[in-house]
Amino acid sequence: GAVVSQHPSWVICKSGTSVKIECRSLDFQATTMFWYRQFPKQSLMLMATSNEGSKATYEQGVEKDKFLINHASLTLSTLTVTSAHPEDSSFYICSARGVGRATYEQYFGPGTRLTVT
Amino acid sequence: DAKTTQPTSMDCAEGRAANLPCNHSTISGNEYVYWYRQIHSQGPQYIIHGLKNNETNEMASLIITEDRKSSTLILPHATLRDTAVYYCIVRGSSGNTPLVFGKGTRLSVIA
Image (cartoon, rainbow over all chains, first blue to last red; front, side, top):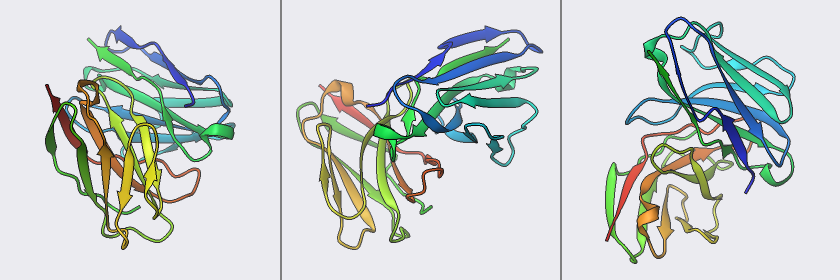
């Protein structure tokens, strides 16, 4: 299947700082990328959908000024958690869908575990 | 997208078939049934999907009832590495519609 990578796999940051998480589609062009968040023992919660070259669409309750999403190319999307606080500690997972082999399937990255101290 | 209902947890003996049910009684005609699984602390992994015919691939089989109101994911010979949370998701065919995850079924494969 298609490969989606995330970097970093885990990060610890201090409260008030910003953290950037990268999501890359390695062997296909991702026209649409999705960002999810998962708290311990809970399911994945969709945060936002982004199409290459367009502004992201955020789900209700997700602050767009706090979670900045950039999808500037067909292989890269970034999520920046600005002014992070301990309650932002979570497992962040990106997902991509695109042309070619991934036409109808949604492929997921391995996730990034963020801990805010 | 239609809502799905799955049992919270299931156990299966190693080497036996694991049959995971999913109820999606409000599914509409153009919605597909997708199955993903998530092993602890990893991203979800695609397993299989179908519209109305039964499907089989190298990982699993998907049996969809004739009225499409329910389906069963079958792992023919479960191994310890199949221990995971399995999500049944119903979604339309639009390329921009994201997968929305429910609570899934926690499958424990026991030696």
